[in-house]
Image 1 (cartoon, helix red, strand yellow):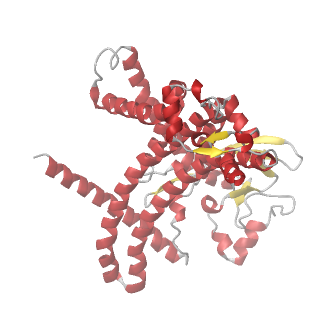
Image 2 (cartoon, helix red, strand yellow):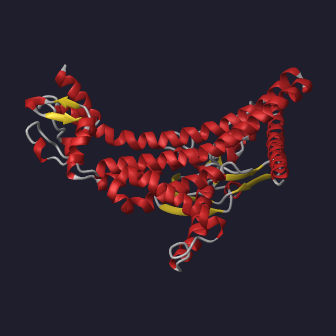
Image 3 (cartoon, rainbow, N blue to C red):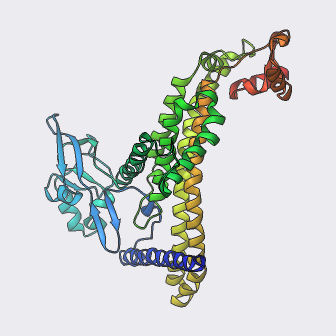
Length: 425
């Protein structure tokens, strides 16, 4: 009996959410049209030095700079907002889009007045959109908080809020000597067990406990960040390549420290590879070290960015058809666009979990491959194998190597696989 009211309430909530987003899109479309500009969907998922609460307004974030003055001295400057920095006279809107002052293109003190006298677009430059540059000197480092930084800190805060009380419960024995209490503890315990049994153990084997803290932290941090981006006025910090690159960098560093003697031996001395081919294979293996974290960063960034762009593009169709064919066609387009938007929104909710899972399992796989110890056998030492090892070898194809050795399929890497194919051709 409760299912139908709950379903209707959920449908109403999502319809209201879609209507609110559509209204926001409509206001920004009219504003862009008034300035003769095109609507930029990337603007919504891009980073910025403000929190966007349109149509209510924008909340500017503090700005912090490490600057070098004209005499070459370093200093630190703090402003409560971008507008405050411009109002101080020490910074001006970067109407030319140069980003910051350089020796080849110094900032001209008269540039703002000249732009205003021309009456062009430069006079209307918004510092929040175009950025700011110092009127004198140059910016060495911009330490300002951005929209994605705020949501990244919020995701970290949620981790503490959720797991610190749960940790206190487990220390008291709740969940260890007795059953978990409450829906939150049951849900989190089920998720932790899933990560342990389905991700850590299959990829890391007996060493799974050593890397469980990192895998759990990465999983929940990415998950919370993905979900925060689906809230109204939220921002997906995982749609920022800098965030995903740092996460992938952690996996890269842990992988290298976990690497065994066999791992580095496969890279700098690929087994079973002809001596003349090794100078070619070694650079390929070294490149393989960096392609893994690169793929991790790009995969998460691209998937989270694409989902938001699809939602915005579907809603944008309503106003595009409205401006081209009139209000009747615009309203007619909304009949199909809004349900499609809700479908993609639910799909994004699923993708938020999937992408956290994919990043975590690939991280565990890369670490596990580095930490695994391989055993190399020639065709004369099969009598030393256990029954399990013989079964594994029987199920894995053998690749012929040089000097009568064999190379097991489960031990191949990117470079050695190509070398084996080359040596047997």
